[in-house]
Image 1: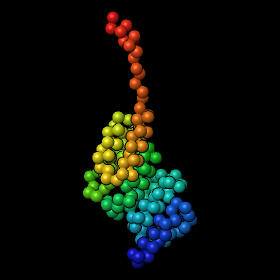
Image 2: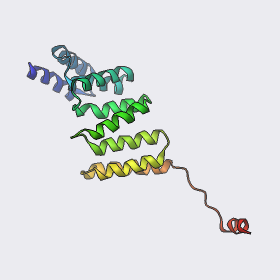
Image 3: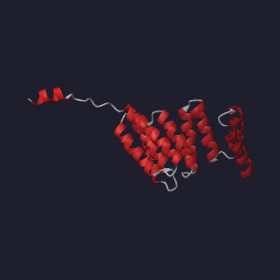
Image 4: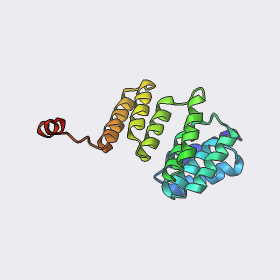
Length: 174
């Protein structure tokens, strides 16, 4: 039976996000055979979050998957994204911190998500700190490019420091 479930999950993955009707049909079959399949639950959560914008329902699917297997790393990024989109910042931060303690988790991506969290909170200096941490855990040149792009975006949002003219500065000293 495991092979049959996997076939439906693979069919759903292959068709996502291009043929959502096929995706939903395959996911419903997979979940009817095993309602606890973490990959199927994760993809169902992604459909709800990324295509239907029903964040609460998506979060419910992600939590269900994590309840089944806390090491289901395929859940982590879409779950964090959904929490950020839904502006559940405290829950997002707590989950990211938890994820960073898990052996085998993608530390670079988790630190980058933490940077994005702080960027959304307009705490740009903290965001840059976590971008630096993400770089430290990156072992992929393509991802390093993505991190540098994130860094430039955050820097561009930082308030510009006003330059004090030398004449004005001399007057203030007198």
